[in-house]
Length: 387
Length: 244
Image 1: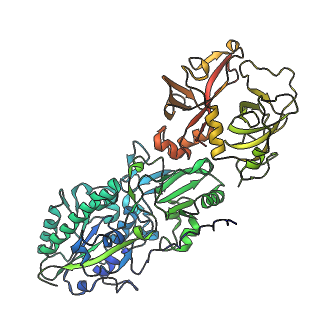
Image 2: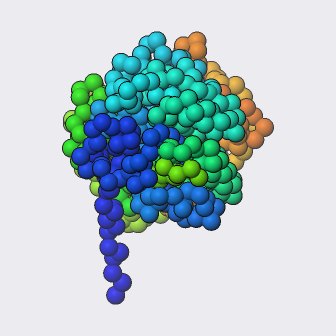
Image 3: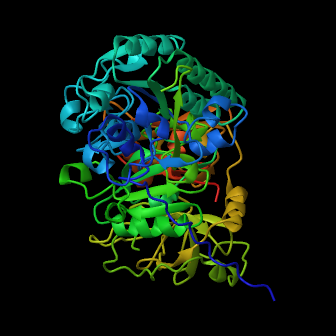
């Protein structure tokens, strides 16, 4: 006699290791003077003796993807500390995670809680720092970055930390939000990045922050295929070039803001019943916030949980906060930036916000809390002159 | 979970699928419209003027006029299955709406139907592509021109589009779609479609964005002729529907 299939239970939710092996601990541990409790052991040994440190953040380089491609990235895969991963933050998305790296604070404190956030009745695109849809307008005046994100970058640094990043990022709202007034040494092409870093090291800067977004771009545009592999090879060569330029006593530390998951065309439509309870959406495809119509929050959560039990963690806002997903309780001002019900897929799929133009075209995505998205490397490399 | 108000409703609590109800129905070649008959209807659109659906015993498109009480608006959703008791109407025939019947009281909600059965029903009832939606060109016609020879309902499968948009002039919601060689622009009287524009915070939606805002890929449109407004009956779209 046939038996009914057992109901699928969602896998246990892995939380970011705030205060421990998490990207929030990287900058405080490297700069000091106070190393977060529980984070003392995360930084590779090489760093302990270094006089100068370069922190290179590779946008979108997940630990799982890196370890699955050891031959494509031999330099990174031979680096000190490659054997274990650290976690990103929630959501595993650039705006939130980069801000956690630079400020050393969890999302509940810095308040950049996602890619698209509710600001009153409008949506702030945190990367573009714009409000509205379609002809969105620049929000640098209406939403001042330093008020929206109050935590200073690079806490504990004795002077201004030089930033080596793309020239075009200078002056944007998001740059102001996560890097403050840090001086930008912009590069136009990738080959200039190591040259800029070397120049700053020779000047005697003790801590340098560098950023490159190629891996994330390629993954979003083409998935984790041949183009991703080629980009990973190029990034590994970039790391090699940087190491070759390190003077004695300096060390290169490499980490990332989040990983990736190949979703391809699998986009979930919420159906008429759920959509009839939704006022609007925010967040990102793999950490989708549903803002419920008045009085419909519980019913929306219940219906979504029933519909997506086998693919998605469905949780109400307060439950997520209570679980510590954002690193602690949220001040009232930050709470309003979130929706009522969150959809975090553990299966390779995404929930599309029709208000977010262009979201349909992404192949690889991130935002949720699967290992592919949550785990990132933290490795160190020294030059030929040694530390 | 409630959908709309339950005040004074004759709806049963949400009852899952209505497969058993549908399976037990007899098959008839023609729709029975005499007073006192109970029609079992698969709802396609629900509007204050009438509830459009498929009579499940005969597979006929029907529009059931329901006198919704003031404190209880039309709250049926597409693919709900309802039972409607027909009222005695000695002068039932409306030449502009030959499919119209009048319900005695509120319809009784029996459940919801989805999947293959719905897909088959809709496919069978989809209007064959013609030169004009609902058999005549233009957006409206005088009431006195309707002689009962044309349907007032059509389940249209667009061959191009659709594009849902809000007109700048009066903020009304319209839909544009290709059907054969015709390019059609019709007003939309579907609250769900109107809400989709609000959810997306946009004045124009199509393709994947429209599907995401509706919650489904729009496969069919329920086109209908309205009751006379200033002497004219207008073509409108009462619902956007998925394939099943």
